[in-house]
Image (cartoon, rainbow, N blue to C red; front, side):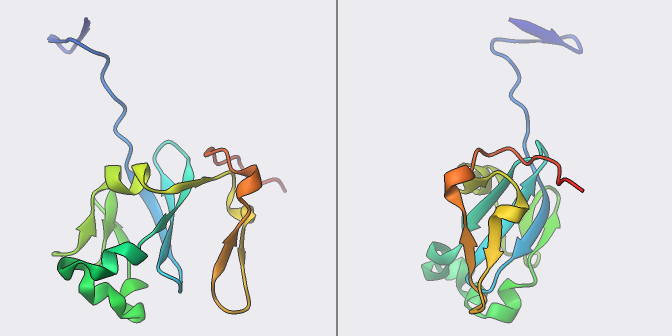
Length: 122
């Protein structure tokens, strides 16, 4: 049991992880930086088949993604829960492991992914 601020909890209090930064790509991926400093890639392509997310098929609209209240949103009706983003994304060691191809698509060096965003050197 844990007591915090006069409240007794049966289990340890889980850290709340939220989105701090989002960078949408041309190929419907979101490069996400979370509050715990992890950088992850979320592939949003599967969302496009769901009615609520159908406006995201428009690449200009998709690229307007922004952080709102700790999650990714596009307007006041379209957002994605931060726990969904965190649990369903691929960890990347650092942003320099994400290489933009000439085609506008991104390539991720997953051989060195460990989920922790180390500070850039230099």
